[in-house]
Amino acid sequence: MKSLAAHAACAALLLSAPAVASSFAPPSRFGVAPSSGLLVRGGNAEAAPLASNISAPNGDVTDVTAAPSSSTALAAVSGGGDAEAPATSKLGPAAPPPGLLRRLFPSLPWHALPNYLTYARCLSIPIFMVLSYYPVSFPNRAPVLSAIFALASITDWLDGFLARRWDIASPFGAFLDPVADKLMVSTALILLAGRYGGIVAIPAAIIMAREVGVSALREWMAQQGKRDSVKVGYQGKVKTALTMTGLTLMLLVPEGVGVESVGWAKRLGPLGVGGVGSAAEGVANVGWSGMLGPSLLMLFASAVITITSGSVYFRAAWPVLMGKE
Image 1 (cartoon, rainbow, N blue to C red):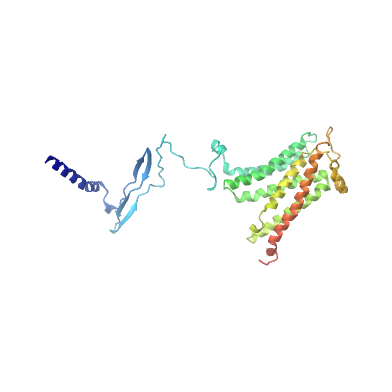
Image 2 (image 1 turned 90 degrees about the vertical axis):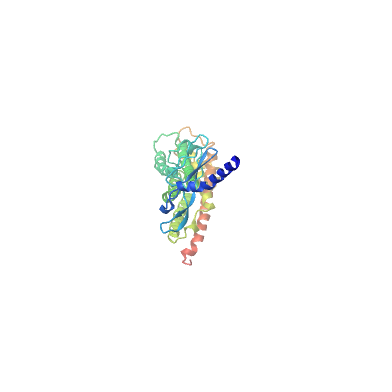
C-alpha cells in the first residue's frame, strides 16, 4: 500500500509541474516576453533565446523568440574565461586577418599607410632634385640618388598592393598615386637628359608625351563614363617596370662616365656623345660603362612599349572619340 501511495504521489507531482511553473511566469496579458536563458555547455556560456506565446493587447497570440540585446556583450566562459574585444580595425571588410606586424603594433594607423607611402614619394621629388646639384662636392651623389629613386619606385608598387589587400582604396589615393609616379619619373628623365644629351632626351620626350596624352584620354573617357575601356593594361605595367629599373641603374652611374664608354652608342653619331666634362677626380669608366649600356637599352625598350601601349588605349577609345558610341 505504501508503494502504491508513493507512485500516486509522484504522478500527481509530475502532472502539477506545468501549473506550478505557469504560476511563476509573467501574465501573458501584459505582453511581457520571458528573458533569454543561459545554456552552459562544458564551461561555455551561451545565450539561449526562449520562445513563448505572447498575447498581444488585442487578444491575438503571437510566437515571439526573445533574442539578446545587440548592446549587451555576452562573454564566452571557456578555458581562462577571456572575452574577445570588439574589432577596432579601420581596414576594409575584405582585409585578411592581422599579420605579425599588425599584431605587434595594433595601435598604428595601418589604414592610412598606403596614403603615407604616396606622400613620402611626393616629398622625395624635391629632395631628389636638390641633391642632384647640391652640395657641389658630393662624392656619393650617384648611389644616394639611385637609392632615393629605387625606394620611390618600390613605394609606387607597395602602396597600391596594400590598398588592394587591405580593401582600403580611397578616391584621393587613386588620384595621387599615378600623379606621384609620373612626377618622379619625369623628374629623373629630365635630369638624365641634361646629363647624357639626345640619347636620353629622345626616349624621355616619347615617354612624357605619351603620359600626357593617355592621362588626358583617360580623363575624357571618365567624363563619358567609359574609363574602364582605357584602364592600365599589361603593357603599361611592363613599361613602368622597365622605365624605373633603367632609370635606377642609370642614376647609379657616376657623373663623368660618358656615353662614349658604351661601345654600340658610338654608331649613333651625335646621339652617342654626352655625359663628359664633369667627372670627379679618380672616377674610372671601367665597370660603370657596363651598367650604363643596359640601362639605356631598357629606356629604349620602354619608349617602344610606350608607343604600342598608348596605341592600344587610343584604339579602344577611337569609337567614342569619333562619336560612334
